Length: 420
Ligand SMILES: [Zn+2]
Image (cartoon, rainbow, N blue to C red):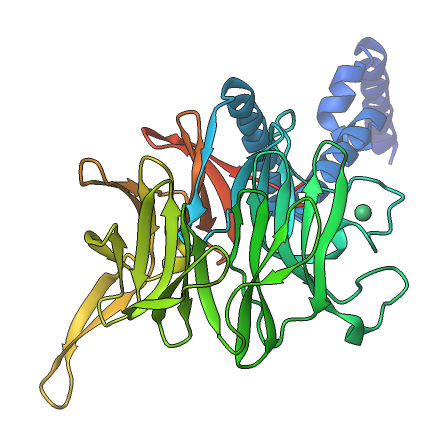
C-alpha cells in the first residue's frame, strides 16, 4: 500500500517535471496535430467545400462557360482583323449570312442575329430592355433573309401582328425590311397567313423584292413590291403554283409543283415552258444554275446548261459565291454487311456527314473540307478573311455556326448567342 503511494508520487513528480520542462506546443504544432480543430483549418475546409459544391453542382456548365469565353474572344479577334467578308446565297435566293451597313447578320432558326465584332457573340436585333417585342423584329418568326448591303429584307409570319391583336386567328405572313442605321423595322406587304407551310423563297432585283403568297392550297403566286414601299404586284398567272423562282438579268424563271421550268419577262408576260424535271433555279451574276428534281442518285446541278460533276442530297443548302459552288453531301459510312434470307448482301450505313465541298467552276476542281469539330456540316455561309463560316450540326444534334481556318483545324470556333 505504502509502496503504491510512493510509486504514484514518483510518477506524479515525473509527470510534473516533464510538463514543466517541455516547451509549450507552438501554434504550428497544434495545427499539424489537430488541423480540424483550428479556426483557420475550419475556414479553409469550408472554402474547399464551397469550391467542391460549385464544381459538383454543374461542372459541365462551368466548362461550357469557359469554352464560350475562349471562342468568343477568338471570334472577336478574327472579326477585328478581317474586315473583308464574302457571303453566299442559296441557289433559290435566301442568305444565311449577310454584310449589311458594315455589320454581319446571321439568319438563325426564325430570327436574325447581329454578330458583334467587339464581343464575338451573336445578339438579337432589339436590345431595348423596355421593349415588349410586340411590334419589333424580335416578335416575328423569320423564314428567309436577303440584303442589298444597306437594308435587310425578309419573309416571315406572326401570330401577333401588332400589340392590339394578340389572337391567334390574326396571324399574318409578311415581307418586311430592317434598316440597321436607324434600327427601323418596316412592313412592306402583309397578308392573311400563307395557307399550309410558308414558302421561303425570296429575291431582290433593282429596287424590288420578289416573294410568293400562298393564297390557297393550289395557288402560290409570285409577287413583287418596291423596296421603298408601294403596291404589291402579282406576276404569275392566276392559279399557278410557284415552287421556286429566280430573277435573272433579263427574265424571271420559276418552277411549278410539277417540276416544270417556266420563264417570263419582267412584266409577267410572254410565259413559256422551258424544261421538265427541274426543282429550282438561281443566278450568280450572268451564270444560270438549275437543280434537277430528285432521282435515285440525288439532285443534279446544271450551270449554264452543263451538268456539274457531283450530286447533292439537300438542294436548299447548295450555295453560290463568285468563286465556287458550295455543297454538302451525307458522308455515308459502312458499318458492315450481312446476307439476308434471300441471299442478298445488305450494307448497313450511317448518314453522318462531316465534310463539305467547294467546286470551282473555272478549274473544275473540287475541294473537300473535313470538319472534325462538328457532327455534320449543313451549309456554307461565307468567308471572313481566310476563315470559313459554316452552319454545322453539333454532336447533340443541335445546330450552331462555326468559324474555322481550313488550313489549321485547331482554329475552329463556335459562335454563341448572348444567352446560350
Ligand atoms: Zn423589341
